[in-house]
Image 1 (cartoon, rainbow, N blue to C red):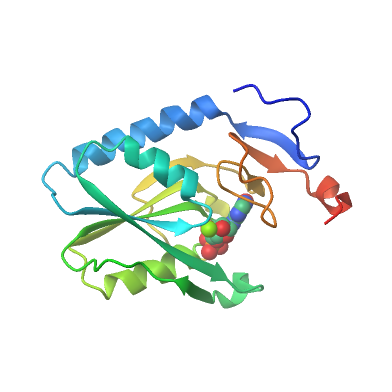
Image 2: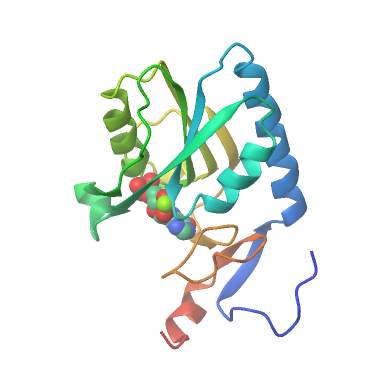
Length: 189
Ligand code: IMP
Ligand code: MG
């Protein structure tokens, strides 16, 4: 996708995943989920705000099964890499009891977020619960996490675009790119 040349964030480094690659992979994931849930009439996607918003809305259009969707918003406290404390800012609205739930997030880094939210949702008696993440940084995991549907494994880089941000910037980029952290430090905040 061509972007106007005057639209750029100075801190963007290498593009790791192009819009075409994202589109292709999201279509594959949608197909896989469609097949896996052929016998389910109670499929619910729960997206974690705000990073998963582009992913979940693209993904749901490629799942050819009846489904409902909901959102949760969570935040990790600074220093969460060690403490792993995750706060629920906004809970999902609909009951998930008896539903086949897929929890959708943008990226698994330490794994604390998915670990914590998964545990919370399991206490609410879904019929099944699977994890779908667009990106995974396996070398960063601090928790053992099973990702049932994973878009891409990426190296240990801080990335933005397609919903992911750095200090709320970069979410609207149509690709996923590494942040040049040296340049980012020089950006006016
Ligand atoms: P975890 O709890 O450490 O797995 O972190 C998950 C959350 O941290 C993700 O849902 C993102 O919001 C954020 N995060 C982790 N790595 C990145 C990144 O490279 N870019 C943007 N956000 C990230
Ligand atoms: Mg997130």
